[in-house]
Image (cartoon, rainbow, N blue to C red):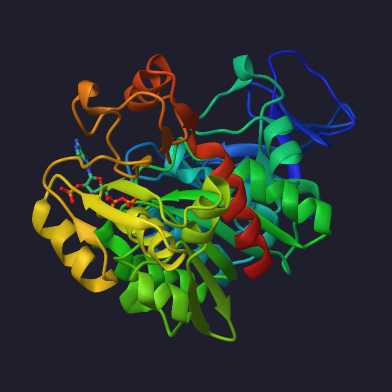
Length: 392
Ligand code: ATR
């Protein structure tokens, strides 16, 4: 079990926190010093149980070399702590891989990209993790509050058997996946946690190398990776294969399975589309899923995209249509990553207009002004996430 240690300005114990770190770096338990945290460069260690700590606010260097350096400097420390800055999600995964080989080391990455190392600490037998009780007490970049760790990520029930799930894509900040999936795992009493990870397409190879070594159970995939992850999938579901993009990966017995829950989710929200004309804006992973499924369900689908060649290619693959100009339509769907991908005056009044974004786009605001039946990205999000849960 990982003890939570809160830096507080005034000494304070709560039911949630067994250990409290005072500003002078001494850890207290029920009023008595338990450990004393000392920088590794300190020449002579004081008496007591000492945590020898290494901090690097710039980067995450070779962790094995750091551990050797601080162990050589102080061979009789009680615990060793390594806190480094995560410049990317890969730094955090490298830290977790290191902790997997060195249980009982306090290891964490600082910065927003390091949050997953704090959340996953109990899975890697990290003996102490630091989390303040309130925002004013944050004393390192990327620290999550005790309430966030215990409330959203159910930190108290994580253990070495916990499976890691998460979202990959770039950006991931707007996603509500950590709220939805952690709550779903809690309801199902599933020993799993869900974290958000910003990953760029060019880093996928390194990402999957770490993901296969770590206890991953599955992933949600968002833009711009829905097509880019295909080379790493061992089994692809026929519907996802036909769509040519996935939003769900499941890690099972050393293999990666790929599924797509976007298309059915969008069409379940739109209702009966048979015989209707859908103008699809965009030709990325999300558009592929919605266009394919709408076509399968009997809609006339016309794809319109900034890069016309991609629209043309998708139309050829799916047997639907494409156009350079917006056609007359019953339903207009924005599946691009742009807030307003067309000219505002092109939006026709009184139609059904859907935007898959999870924020209020200019596109949907204009549709509202024109008295359209507006559907934002949340209903589709919940549908596809529910379907993901059934795969996870
Ligand atoms: P997703 O996986 O969510 O579909 P994606 O694969 O990154 O995301 O695709 C984004 C789509 O948004 C693409 O069709 C892109 O157009 P291009 O094919 O020309 O790249 C479209 N898009 C992005 N920014 C846009 C903008 N400013 N105006 C219009 N379309 C845009």
